[in-house]
Length: 169
Image 1 (cartoon, rainbow, N blue to C red):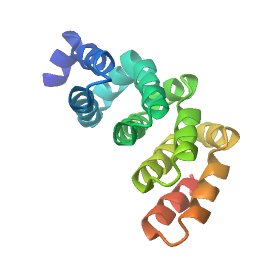
Image 2 (tube, rainbow, N blue to C red; image 1 turned 90 degrees about the horizontal axis):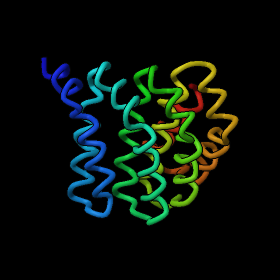
Image 3 (tube, rainbow, N blue to C red; image 1 turned 90 degrees about the vertical axis):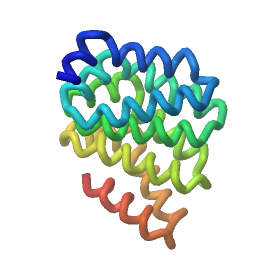
């Protein structure tokens, strides 16, 4: 019932709009991203988030990356990673440039361990969707990026595990 109400009453659109309207207010934007991330646990709601908000979510990634707002950027990677678990969202992630945006963020902030870890996990989640999505991640430079992360974080077992998982996808 709650999911139907959320979808019927345009609740997802409201949350996405609040995030975009308040990208300069970390409290509001972070709360919106956290709410969307929690809602991805339901496949139907996740698909609806992808349908009505993917462009905005990936635009927010670009804005936060350009402003070097690492905390929010990391949370947006988590959101996209969760959205990637719903197969209906994969084409939207790819079409809106999500793979390249995550790779660019990892390359722009290679010293930020948490951002790199979440970015690699997001690429892994996208690649796990299908053989086609694995190929897309590879063609966009994901494999090369992950291999560089492995070299950079050669003594960090948690990141190495994320990299190994992503390379197996």
